[in-house]
Length: 47
Image (tube, rainbow, N blue to C red; front, side, top):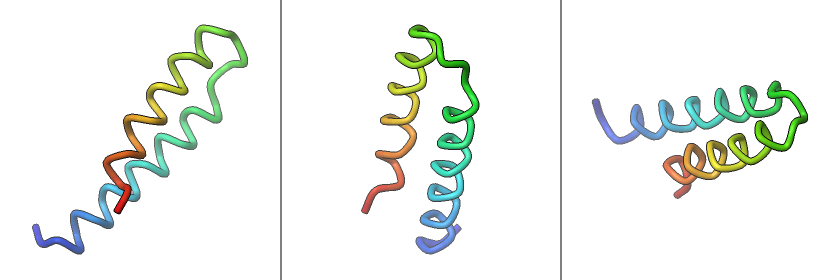
């Protein structure tokens, strides 16, 4: 796997997690867990 492939795959992962978090119910528990998941998943794809 080269660097460009890794960047593409981590970006796709972050986008899938964003869609997952947006689909979570609007309960307090889901929001807290979703926020943490979103932060951890998207920091991998940041430059």
